[in-house]
Image (cartoon, rainbow, N blue to C red; front, side):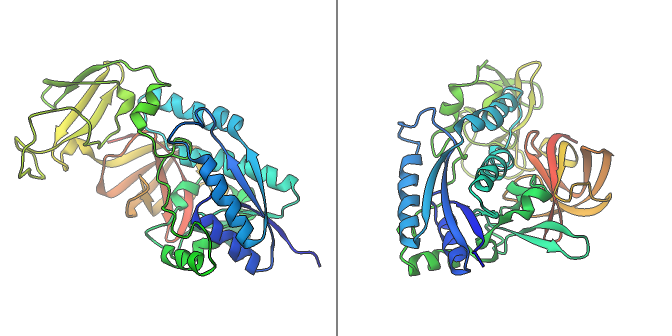
Length: 369
């Protein structure tokens, strides 16, 4: 019997490297593919794709698998980057990693792998897939390491994609992944995790956006309507942002969490029509808290929406699950009503729904109250 062929997305990082090694140990025929998704300024100091490819190739060498270089930059620009810019220009804060997973890693890359005769693909994401015997559906589960779980970024995957995907490190803690990498002598065992947006890398974000988005400066106002500073363009700010507001001379030592003269300032609202940025003082200001949210462009892992009722949700990646009630307005729209007010719920980000360890899917936040 011939071995099952699995194509692994080798990014140059330690998680995908250990994923490939684990699959080989499990008896699969493993082929590595390095995905190149961005080439606008590949010679810049920030773009690390050449270094990453060298790392991926040396990993493939140690594990003893073939590696291929695949270029998805054109698809990325059309399907992910164009949408990313549209959202930013409209004053929202999109999450390109979610779009990249749905459109590139589990669409273009998956199609490419199938053309290479693969039966499955694998990535180094911290998540798990389980076939539910009762329903016959594939479920997306949280990764076992709670500090690394990436199901939030994968919530737009559908049944066809989940049925063809393996997440080998989803069963492990990060410390264990690093230990395995060191033990088997992987050259990138100590390589630090990348934190940049998938195509931007570690470069200064505002400087990058500047090249693509027209900026129109305008007033920064406080809750009483006083103009206290100028913003450089609404696209460059996100709700809850505290750094880089340029409101000088107002903050002092010994700041309190509540209001007060020296409390820190936070972005609370954006008025696109009037090109005004509204800021408030104090982390727990009422303008920063929302009890409900509306979401659109819903995508459900099961292929249909869950029944209205009690669930948990995340409105941003690094956040504890918050209990809420799901109400459905239309097939691709829903609202969430939280037990506790949520902080800085941001249009353009994703609201992702959970039933215990099962990620059900989610939608793009349209507004909150």
